Image (cartoon, rainbow, N blue to C red):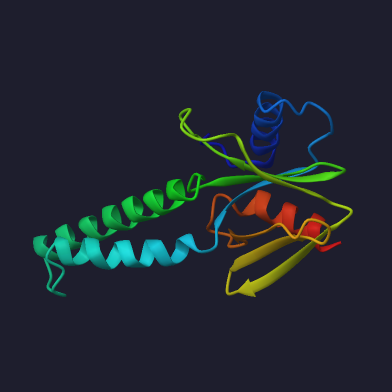
Length: 172
């Protein structure tokens, strides 16, 4: 689950799809995304964690403790918000010739492997640029099903290589 190279992500996607009973189709690209609305949960958790850690804007050990508390609060809030929606914080988007799969990563057996799948022929992918981040909305014109994801194209992000490839495939 820790790999972010395109080769590792494709291998992880193949294994997850096989475990979910879908062994057909070559994985053309795979990237790590998150639900777009989890960004809000992280911000709320950061604020709550900072207050709990005594974040008063000071310096020294108190500021360090507040920073650690804020980070842990953000992580806890994000994970809780994700699992309440039946997903992991990190989702694997795998593109096959016919389907766009949204898969949970590292569920520990708590959540199902496949969150959603969209037929490429009837799914519209909308990509919004927000700085170095990208919001990807997948909407199936037949069923009306949709999902809004958040990815990265930043050169400093370990996951950006796979995200860029997924976004390029969906932009065509």
